Length: 100
Image (cartoon, rainbow, N blue to C red; front, top):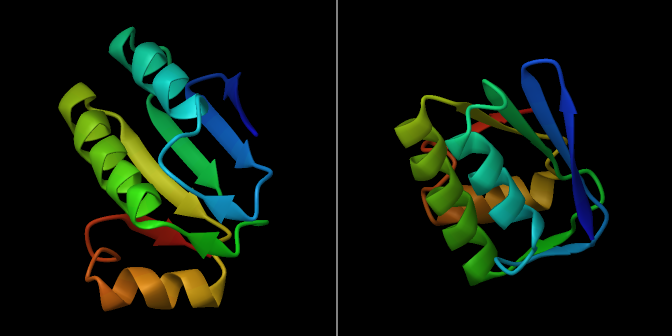
């Protein structure tokens, strides 16, 4: 389970699951709050995540496009090396802002 925390103009989401799929309810909350301009940056902290499903990759890209639409920066942090390799394999890493 993941939770969205608003800190000033930043939204922070810490994922607790080892597997990221596209069905986390927090994605709906991010979308709703972004549409109301409740933050300028949203940071997805994926530190415990060890695997990502194809629907998880698709959801990250969908979130990136949606945040671009609302003028909000999307950042992914604490991504494990193995997951970065997966995103590079699918050439998704260049589309997402990923920082260590």
